[in-house]
Length: 184
Image (cartoon, rainbow, N blue to C red; front, side, top):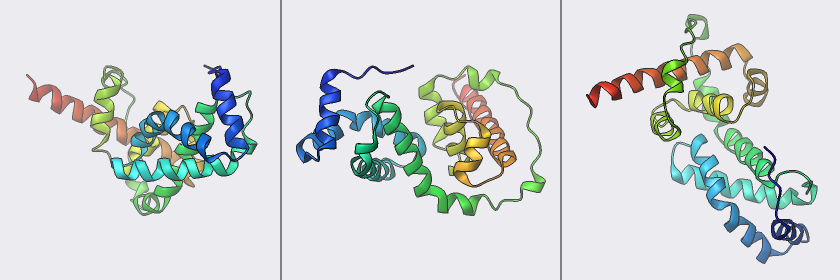
């Protein structure tokens, strides 16, 4: 799905390209809610997300002259936010990646539990996932990256990406089952 930017949005971006701080502030305010929504999926807290969003906008304004106005600004911004969140968490993720992968077992694909969740339920349940699992789940299931892309971005083997995604889905299934029994 390709967003057709309005002429007002195109004008705003053009003014940002010329270095107008007033217009950069307007662009920040216009896309802040969207940016926080993306950031919150990748960060452990609202404060962490705010830092990622602010860092991402610094990158946006530092490289906005390279933005191709024929493409979607939202998609470009989303990619910068995701990359900023991943860069920020990369240190933490490296520590978590040292778990014993040899002892990982394959978890079967039962998509029914996850497919029955709505977005709000998933986001709530995802708060309890370890950072590496949440990041990979977001990248694969929500943002549409494949395992090879995830592996490249996180500097891990693609097999590890698959294992962490399976673990995240399994934890989400268990959390859903537990929640369903609690409400009976």
